[in-house]
Amino acid sequence: MARGKIVIRRIEKMSSRQVTFSKRRRGLLKKAHELAILCDVQVGVIVFSSTGRLYEYASSTTTTTMGMPSIIHKYQSAREHQQLLNPVSQIMFWEGEVRKLQQEMQILQDHQRKLMGERLSNLGVNDLCLLENQLENSLRCIREKKEQSFANHTVQLNEKGYIFHQENFQLSEEIKLMHAQNLELKNKLYALNGSTKGATCYPPSQSIYEKY
Image 1: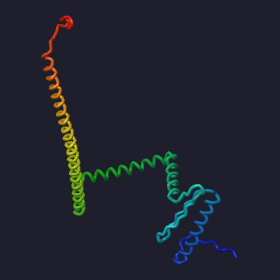
Image 2 (image 1 turned 45 degrees about the vertical axis):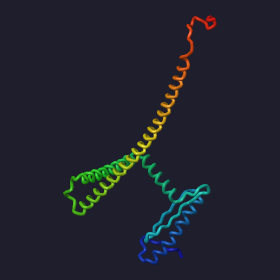
Image 3 (image 1 turned 90 degrees about the vertical axis):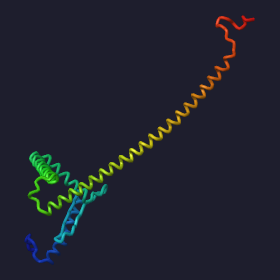
Image 4 (image 1 turned 45 degrees about the horizontal axis):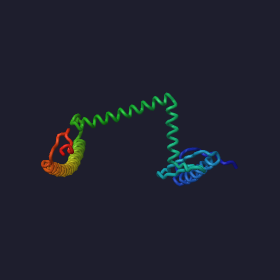
């Protein structure tokens, strides 16, 4: 007897639906595995049950193991590449990006105005309290950053002062050494001058032997 054709619609009975899901899920993953081996292709299958449980299959090759994240990344890259190749899709893509950026800019501008105390008439008590807490947290962070900057600056000044003190001490020692050397040279010069005072001096043209 020929098997009757199954109508493709939701199975109302819970137990029958669970049994059908289990059988067809195993069959789907088996077919995906066979397709990957027979045709040497990369296959990724993701299934979420009605209870939210995840079932997945990701093909692998002999040279490298792809894994589901790699297959998803490759799929996203291929989709983006296809969109950019189509001029119409490319225009729609960038128009969507522009709209997103404009919306984000508008939200940031509105938030900035509220932080500056503008356009607060439409805010309720809870929103005002939340904004006040945000401002207080921001001020606290600013104060902490300022105090940390002052502390770092003070440490740097102390380090520079210590370096200057060391350099000043070294220069003082060098000056003392130079003073001592200068004094020693003066004493030697004085002694040399004293020893030459008693000697007889002759004119440059007269030889010492001409005296005799």
